[in-house]
Image (cartoon, rainbow, N blue to C red):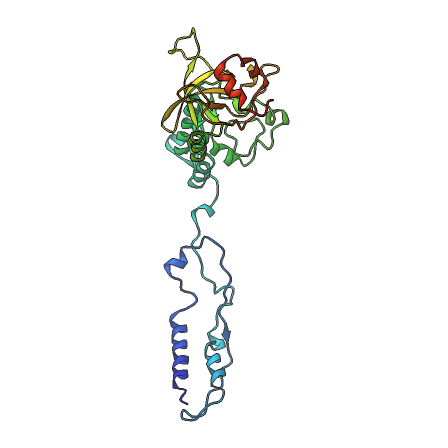
Amino acid sequence: MSIAPIASCSGMSRLLSNVLSPLTASRCNASGRWWPQPETKRRLSTKPPNRRSSQGETNPNAVQDFQRDDVIVTPRSQIRLSAKEAAPAYYTPRKAGNGFALEKYKDGEMVANYTLYEAAINKCKVPWNDYNGLTSQERTIYLAHLKAINERKLSYLDPMTGYVVFTTSHHLYRGKCCGNGCRHCPYQMENATPEIRKYELSKHRTRPPTMGVHRRTRLNVVDNSALGKEADAAGKLAYCIHVYKQGLRSRHMPHAVLGDKILVAIRGQMRKAYVVGANTHVNYRKHGVPNTDTNNIVLLDEEGNPLGNRVTSPIPTRLLGKRDNAQFAKVLALANKFI
């Protein structure tokens, strides 16, 4: 049996070992990796393998010689680096630089550097469902704060009051919560007093009190109608477009409370509905009237009958006083829980 391919394989491995130096890295590897990689060390040996005496003879240890050829043989005099120092040097990402710092801008104004700017932008991200529930004043304040972050400024003027408000970049550069209950605190007010953190109206600092359901208020359908299930599955909640109350002009649309009939827009359709649950502001809650976390409605068809055949949410017992209304009595007949 000829073993010439074994010798050629050994020569090819030595040739590749000289070409693929452990100190050189490709552009792909030099750009850094996004996840930790296992440590791979190159096996180095200073002991030369035992070769056959002549080329024509059959060597019974050919398999062992082939396994030895896989190990790169390097003289000890050529090994100048240790295995740890021979690892490739990766590109240092931009975020791992000097960290949060301030830079001089026009007229000596100090602004955030790029690392601080990126961290502040990530802290200011708001999901669409949270942004959709903001009022017009809250959206104005949010956009003013986001504009200041894009300009890398540390403060901005409140468009409603004219006061100076610190941005998220200023709080991140400080490195800790000051405990004053700031509007854009990125540390969840960890150093604030329990009175500030547990204050019930702290999340309504910029939101005016709401007395009930009004125009563009998002509503949850609590019956088992197909239209309500489709809106719930798609994440597109119904919203109010009109409130039916006698003696009040439609131009100045009144607020709807428990038991009122409203007109809603849901999945491209207009449907009438009854309000069976209201998220009333704490300043306007009445004794004995339960308050729900969401505004709940029951859809009606064109004839005024309930669109579904079951109400899945508890209904306040205060609504039992409207059993004299024929249409509302049908809604109460579908409910099986009262609070």
